[in-house]
Length: 282
Image: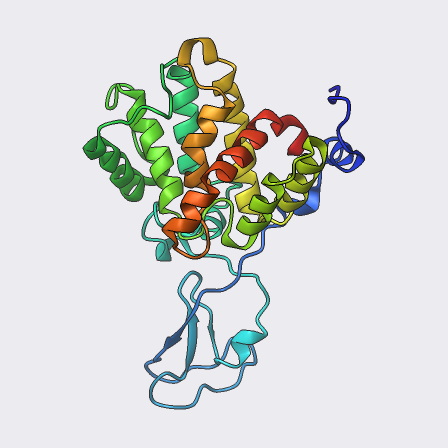
């Protein structure tokens, strides 16, 4: 595939080289202080866990039991147990994909598949809101039935309900798709005036995203590019989608209304850049 002239060498190399290491999904353990009933041994050092209460910590995602001190040395090898994952929405993105052994959250795949099957030409796609009660129904269906959730046109003929459910999934993530750790770096990249340098800076920050977040963002941008290719019917270009998805995909680490208002144009610009250059950036 021919790349646009003027793209920096770094971005050109990234576009031509698939980084297999990026999909070596790691996940930190979610340790919480735990009181064990009966004798327990640490699963890291194999020594006895002394005491009557709060003898150690347990990972609430995979169930690993260790001493509090040992928890600092446990590698990032958490394999979440599906039995411990009670819902789809509001669940940490990496936890969900590790539990289901998928590259992306299945709710993202299922919603996008449905939207592309029957909604790409729908006017105001993603901008027009669906009925809130029906969007909540879709959320409950995914939380209850997982990948078996029925979001077909027979049940939800209005495609705006499905787009609303997908946006809600992203808004409900405890850590946004564009993580808190990378937020300020993306904002700084958006402020660069030179287009080539800005694109290179965006690419460098993308490489800092956790693999599950990166893959979810990549898949979404490919989809949104398809949405823009139907602009004559749906009236949604990359800038319009940036307005919708900017605050949905990225939120400032500190919950400040002033920061949010100040950063809105940069949030929009980042998403716009990701959509317009998805074939080069990812």
